[in-house]
Length: 254
Image (tube, rainbow, N blue to C red; front, side):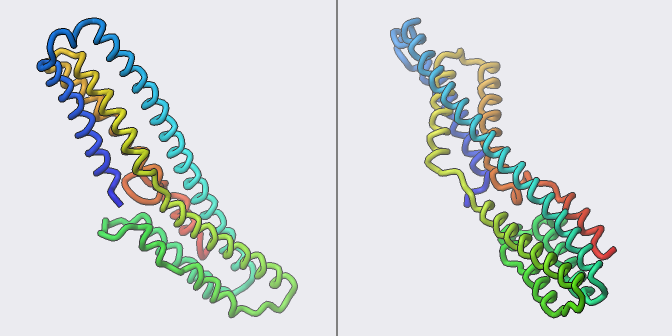
């Protein structure tokens, strides 16, 4: 999959290129094409494209922010469940020591996979999808044999939480594969490029104009980059915080 940064840079090139093309056309078009009546028509078309582009880009930003907030809330809930699971196993007794140790190793491995301290070539979510630590945790718990009613209840609750954690893990993995349709991005980029072309067509050719058009291209391209990054909140440059999982790891084994 093309990276968000690559698409962002491509957007800058297309949008700013459209603005430069507009400046070039301004010097090549015959005078009748640059009269007030023609400029008014261009302004109307530019206003329409600006409205549509702003609406679509705003909806994309809102949707991406919602996905990011949902993933952040799910990660906080996951950390809470892991701490609660460890406490249940501790209440059960020393028979669950192996399960608690495996749980700690699983959490530590997940943190290192999604939020590695050293950048590696492998994608975090790709490696995370291949892990099976929580399945191993559940298998170690099968070896525990309860002898009292309290242990039966604690074991059943622990198994239920592990099942919920496994389900939540696959939900995160599936959400990581959500993508914005390419045709949608292409159409949005076309609107923005034509919009900036109209800006260049109506603007005088000088350093100030070119600088303003470049800043405008960088701004809208930055918005596209942020949307693409926040759509995948567990990979890329913009990720959800690892604080809930690291806090959970600190409390495991206490």
